[in-house]
Image (spheres, rainbow, N blue to C red):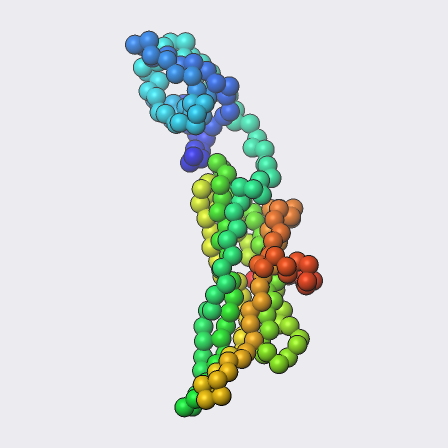
Length: 228
């Protein structure tokens, strides 16, 4: 539902109300929650979630007085609530961002590739989710014959995600070396091992997960700085 901004008196008001039975001048009734008032229209929500817009002038005098009194009340201070982690869906997709060939002859190729992840957050709340911070650790190995892993850290601040909306961004990338020799019949090189992420809302940890899941038991989290 799009958020309506409060104007003075009957132009617009956004308040919470208990369900009420509204009746028009033809005797037709509907029980719903009053959401907002704009000019001669009132926005209501039925118990099943259906939204309706009614003309105030076509309602009974009692309903018109109720709406007038309701709209005149000052809007209460908005209470901030913590997002439900189950309604913030995380998608992690590993990918090759770029590639460059360093050496190439008849049967031999040596490339350096830049690998990273795309992170998608989908908001399934009925309201926007604001002030999210995503921190991540990338685990890679640049060369197959070097045991020391490559560690890349980063973070991203997301100001807001609309209800039923999503936000997608790319992480930083790490270099992976690849060699191929068709004469001797071998491929070798490093690999992008995976990603570990932590998602915060106003500094409260909401979600922690990794791909693959084993990263959170086989490796250690490295502290991440603030926004890139």
